[in-house]
Image 1: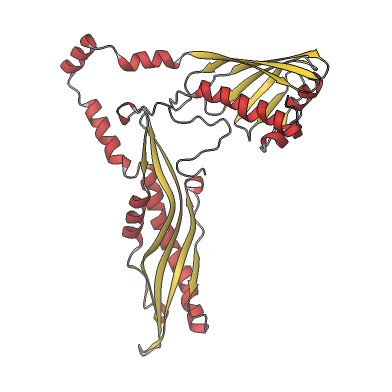
Image 2 (image 1 turned 90 degrees about the vertical axis):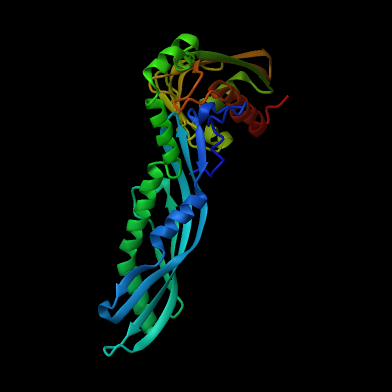
Length: 346
């Protein structure tokens, strides 16, 4: 998972450059780290694990540490949680003999190294340590792991479910929905007459598409540049990401770790590449067309022209920087990378 406030730079749509956040409904992001600390403390502090079973007494004292990142994004009413946490608990145990006399008291810790939205459907790894590793201490440690693990897992599930519902953003989100639903009909009619239907206008803008055109010059033969763009191993090299590229017309390709997929429409060695491109964060069913033409005005100098058509103005989440990020991706992540890695600068 990408860290809070960061993202994979390969073709990931960034926030609006003007910072606009219309009524906090189009996009809202809530930092949930402190809220996560409080909830996990409520769930895990002062938990009894064993109360005399086998003459063992074990309880979790408290949450000692919650580190990492946790946030909730709300995009047009859709909740998208993100978290990656390391949690440490303290516990204590005591073993008694059959007459109730104490044999040993120990302290230890429980670490949950990775609670993440990426494995929300899986039980997290749990590590138990104890300060006294003698025979009795080991017995208490084993009992803490055997009996305490399912208890801790249940509490972590409660946290995961709470984040899935919106965490601290849930109440605000529900309030917005109630306010939206509870608007009086008469008032809505007045707004309809006196103000333009903002939501409907935005939907029209969503259906728009753009075209970008780039022209770049390289110090190489046209066939060399063509081969680089059609060779999956060279793609892996200059992008530092996984790629699969067919060299046949009609063949499919996948680049930037699967962020972009498509198929070849036309191929003319050293002259032309025409492909269908689709980005993973675009609305379903939308594809674009890429046309690369190669011209060699003099030996060793190649001019490539990129025309990328049918680029949607917004991605599936309503982010409106698709076009500018696509253009930047072509320049910075493909063309300039090829120039730098293969020494084709002029």
